[in-house]
Image 1 (spheres, rainbow, N blue to C red):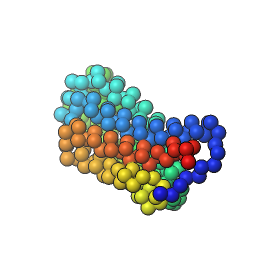
Image 2 (cartoon, rainbow, N blue to C red):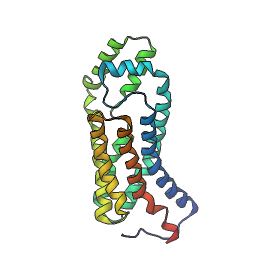
Image 3 (cartoon, rainbow, N blue to C red):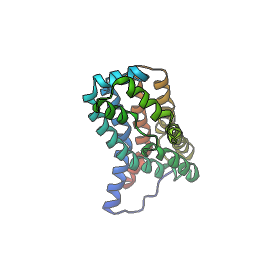
Image 4 (cartoon, one colour):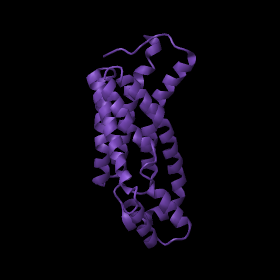
Length: 220
């Protein structure tokens, strides 16, 4: 495995590197926990989703805060993983980081916020379904919803860079490649909630494992 630069660093730099490693592990893990706490099974859409959402609307704030914290932690986590893989594959690592960074940006919107606001305002479920459909498919920016898949592709590229550049453990690179592929599979196949949460937990292992060499730099 290719070694990272181990030049003596300040305490601030050490803190930053440990924060990146922590973010890489915790960001996907928080999303996995959010899925496990969600009362709505993956793959449910349309009228059924809105009605189940309404029946469990009080649980939504918890999901919002977990998602927000995950997005915040994902930024240093991805920078940490990219720092490691770019030591071996600079161009591929940079390409992966640019694409993966889309996951931390609100470019695709959040339909759950729309549903929450509509139901809290007293709009009936049928009208809410129409509103969500327009929000997802009828806005000039609706196509940005597919940017999520670009973000997943970016994570795969980071995993490939980790393997080919040999700057991170092999198991971490493999997990970082496999997890982003399994995330949409679990959703489209409408698998049980636990099955949808597993890829995010695997992503925590992959992203965190790739960033992990940053934590060990001081001990080399």
